[in-house]
Length: 269
Length: 348
Ligand SMILES: Nc1ncnc2c1ncn2[C@@H]1O[C@H](COP(=O)(O)OP(=O)(O)O)[C@@H](O)[C@H]1O
Ligand SMILES: [Mg+2]
Image (tube, rainbow over all chains, first blue to last red; front, side, top):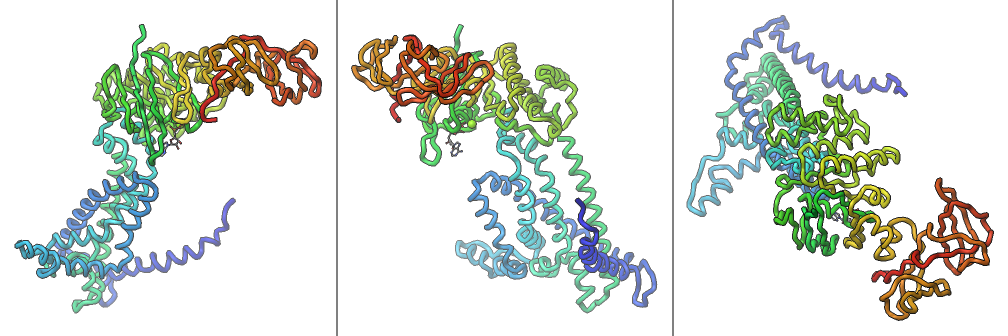
């Protein structure tokens, strides 16, 4: 039985209004100058910001890898817990996400500041104060903290589907813990890993709030620069659109590269 | 030469404070086909999991060739398991599923290819190497699961109701094949089932379990002909179980009459279970019968008829090659050798 095609119209309209049109606008702005004539100038102007772009990608990769390293064992442990413990742990994981993103990041500011909670506690035992904020580490910490659940949830949801008897079969056939992970759990978790990597990398590479609040102005990311083109003194939506477009293309390219690698991995293992 | 390969001593397993296995002791003879038989929930799988290393004992000992292995993790034990739900690796093709254990042992590629080939031959699945496990039927998946375990040449193979999901015809064929493999490869099989017929046809030794306890260990003949109590008698084939009183040695009273029997050594007037197999009751004309009853019901079972006969307050089950009309009155006789007297089980 086929549903009538007309049922798809609302969705088509939705996609048109909120995806196709904005995308078209971005491309349009990126390819034109103030007078509305076609130009590639905006794209070439990006070269000035190559180091920022590079830093954004680097930070996002580091944050994604750290998230993966934390989320993989954490998700596995959750997926093997009893049903009741599983739901408790998943809820605990979600609770911070119910708090406003800005508030969460502000909280880290008050923790990391020169006279913040951590330094004051360290002071009590005669240590510090340390520079915990306004550096690249703090920015990456902010990314990991904010986006970790995006890695854990997809990983957990594929891992929980791995039947315990498959794990036992691997052990029965001689796998120690390391081999069990490499030959069974990792390959079976690949779909969750690729979803999680995209879900962490994309918001990390384009964030501007985290770097602004925890980076102290010396660790601007491409997101900050783009944001300035739309709301700052250097108002220039044409350049901003060009940057957004280039960023999007780079992200798409990296994702397709990653997916390629991911599917090859399945065959090798 | 009989040589004990696995020995379970006073095994106790508890879950949530409840005893699942209550002090089980069991010696498995090398190269035998041993079956754990009992109703669902009696602890068969748990017993197997202790041997495989997947369940822990609260107390007890597990010896392999006389050496304790109870603290050895599963991957270091010389046993392999065929799991109830097959548990094949979904991300690997059939060849790689079977090769899994050999790759872990880091055997050379030539040897792996040869041994996987041998196994595919053994389970009649040559030519399926490249297929995905999703393309296989239940029976074929079961064969691959068996091949994947046997390729490692374990000393002992554990099988947890491996044929449970197969239809009757396929199950019968696989029973014969499994028995043949066990004999050809000279490997000890510990086989779990709740199907008494399966247990009787395949096993060298049957271990009958109930509620986390072993009821009886013996050859299929022993278990069938000399069941130790009414539970075993009833579980192994159908039985008539009647309350009786042991009047003295060789004389038992049941259904209001006294019968000569071959059992002795019971207390005087001890309450006992009297067990009579349906095929051991002979149908005779009314006036020649020790017991007289009315036929209630007749079912054709292929080789024999199964009749239910109401007599002296019991419904007797009789297997006979001749059928009687429902409603007719018949006589029934039992020879003394076919009357089995058993102590009452404690918890009844
Ligand atoms: N992991 C477990 N947690 C709690 N109870 C269990 C667990 N495994 C088995 N049991 C209980 O132990 C009893 C025996 O189970 P099992 O060994 O699987 O029986 P069988 O294989 O004979 O059907 C059952 O009552 C079952 O509910
Ligand atoms: Mg079971």
